[in-house]
Length: 116
Length: 111
Image 1 (cartoon, helix red, strand yellow):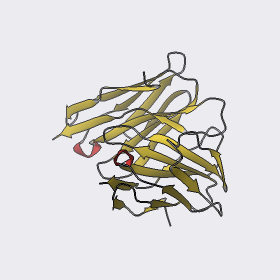
Image 2 (cartoon, chains in turn blue, cyan):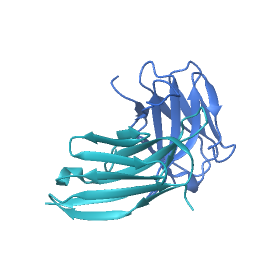
Image 3 (cartoon, each protein chain N blue to C red):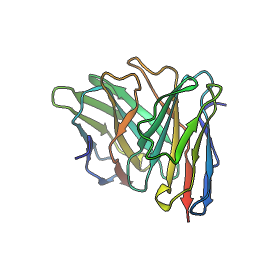
Image 4 (tube, chains in turn cyan, blue):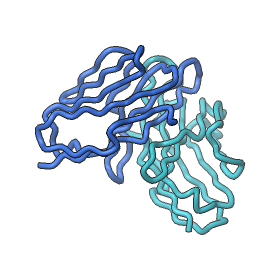
């Protein structure tokens, strides 16, 4: 694929349910980021992967949130016991390398999560 | 206080006007990004800069590291420029290169 893709594009769930959000980064990109954007706000960092490992998960709001990237490519963000406050657009971004001066991040279209 | 502040939050302009969006930050940074987000659409990177000035078409971005301030300028604005413009910074000294975002500036260019 040409860019970062995310599925589903929209997810509506009930309070207390479990959801999984998927991100397919650009092929060959080793760095992968998850961000969350609430209505009217800028995105907020959740977690960063370098390869298969979560190098920085300091943005995860609590232990209901977890993310994996088992083969260093596709990543899944998992949310347990969803709450209405989890409603937001979840954005994924990838970059070729994590460091350096020219670390352009390429963003996916996002998954809009609505918790009823 | 947010680490990245943008002004104005909302901006309405007439087609052809020169537009300036400002960004101030309070942390040490390795780079600053300007991003564009259309309603219902994804985020597109416009510029990434760590010093000086960059130009791409009708867009110009400048940064003053000493003053911790950046500006995004749009010359000869057009209705298709209507979008949310977001300033984001990469923290200094870490390996993550995670972005810290401003809240965005909603720009509407009227014909």
